[in-house]
Image (cartoon, rainbow over all chains, first blue to last red; front, side, top):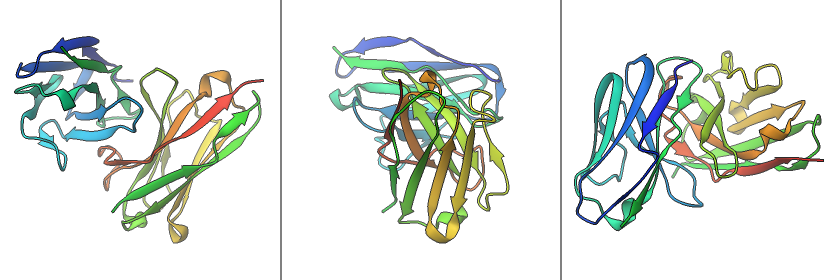
Length: 106
Length: 120
């Protein structure tokens, strides 16, 4: 099973600040998907296949990485970006998620 | 508009069974892999099961293998999850999710979830 470790677990950012969330895999994966989950709502696909933005995702978001190290970056934090972000690998079964990064606004 | 609507959740005693359903609309159901993903209260996401377009291939993590069965009825655009021998650790909100056209593709759409509580 591929274990995904996200860091940090929780963080707070000020409006306009650049934010980077990381996801490390215990074995190499071909790509990474990311999901955003706001409090009390269902998760939404946010970034897929490492760097492709899902429909409607603002272009201040970007994704990068390869092998065992992946990241999600927000160029300039906005209030609406406060949420929990999960990474997920689809390279091998069992499909696994990271434990999430809770991103708060300062 | 893609819609996934789960039903069938509720309170069930340990060791008993429950069957969840998901009604899909807004896309050609038979073209997509489908999945169930769960989230225990205040916890993260856990993949539960995936089924291929025809239903001939199914995939499960060890935590539910042998107890849960995913199935689909393409004629009814419906997805199911039969859960047997339920345990307290199965307590969670269960989401129906649509993959792309292969099993490793992302969960592109999610339902609103149905809560399953396993307790005596």
